[in-house]
Image (cartoon, rainbow, N blue to C red; front, side, top):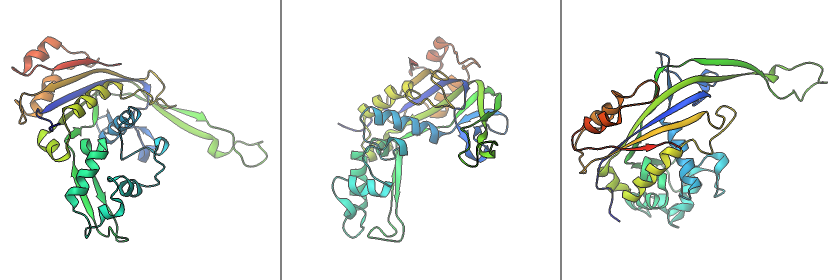
Length: 287
């Protein structure tokens, strides 16, 4: 199948209720906010969730979560060496393999490599000494930001009892904090570039897979910080241009929704359909 023939832009509108959508480890795991107090979910966090949903659907994923590993590999290097179509360590040896061939093998095998890209970099030891093979992916996902300033509630909690001492005194490690966003609507934008898709082999079928995964991005992702039902995809907006170059810039396409999106996550669908003549968006309800 040929690579992607049409530029694609997309948007994700989601709602958070009493959950920590993306904790900041440098700030006591409080929900991420910018300096203005608006909530933020990083692009890395969103792509992690996409990778997990893709893996659950049976697609081969290179960057796997530690708790979702299915191949037993202990590192990304081991996975790369064992997964490049049987080439093994020779795939990363500049004396025995061409970098373009290795990149193609990686894109053919792993969905997330041909979608998001990957840098295969190795240190100064072994056959792959100093080798760096960059793969630039066609799918870009921006960080999500809330429409309004979010309120963050912090609650002190008692964790599991201390395992030290005689148990008569509460240890300092038994006290902790939980943080949550009380309520917020977030918007996220992304695009798929056909020119970059040519290099990785990303095709129309892959684009349909991404579109089908976006409404399910929070399925099977529940935790103490994000209980079931606290994270909800409201809508996916999908613009498919009529050419590789696109009828409009991604900035203008994204602004067509950004300017209509209200604080509660609703928008005038008719006005959105008429905002860009010749480019009618597909609106997909969340799960």
